Image (cartoon, rainbow, N blue to C red; front, side, top):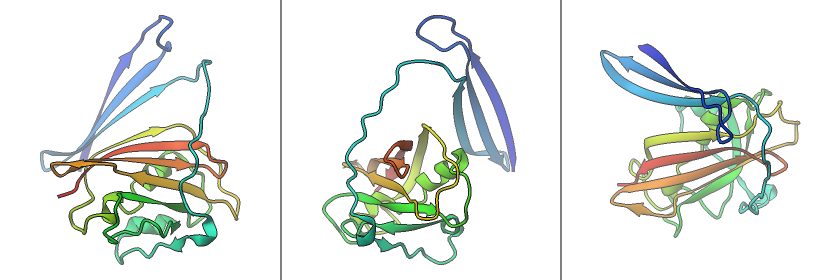
Length: 197
C-alpha cells in the first residue's frame, strides 16, 4: 500500500483570507488503484470574530442510557466505551434515523484529531434505527470538521455524540454528527453520506 501527498498552497493577503492557508491531498493506493483520498485544510492561528451558540442536548441523561454491545471482531470498538440513548436503538425500525449517547476512550489519552475522526465513525450509523444491515450505513463519503481538541478526560467525564440523517433520497442519506466536550462545546462535526439501500 502506497501513499502520495500533494500540497496546494493558497496565499491570499487580503482582509477576507488568513495569510497562510494550506490544503493537503493524500491518496492511498493498492495494486495501482486509489483506495482512499483525504483532503486536509490547515490554517495558522489568527484573531477574529468568535461565538458559540450550543444546541440543547437531545440525549437522555447518562443514568438512563444503555451500554453499547459491539459485534465481535470489529477492532475499532476497542478504542472506546459508550452508553446509547435507549430512545434510538439500532435495528429497532424506529420512526427517525437518530443515534446518540455518551462516549469516552477505554484508556486515558488525549482527545486529539485522530481520535475525534475515528470516534465520529465509531457510533452505529443513524439509519440503522430505520433500516437493517448491511444496508443503512455503508459509507460513500466522510468529511470531518475539527474545532478543538482536549487533554485526557477526568475519570468521571464523558463526551457526547449525536448523529441524525433526516432524509434518504434514492438510497442516499447525509448523516450529520456532532461530538461535544463535557461542557457541551463542539469538538468536531461529521458530514457522512451513507447508502441506505
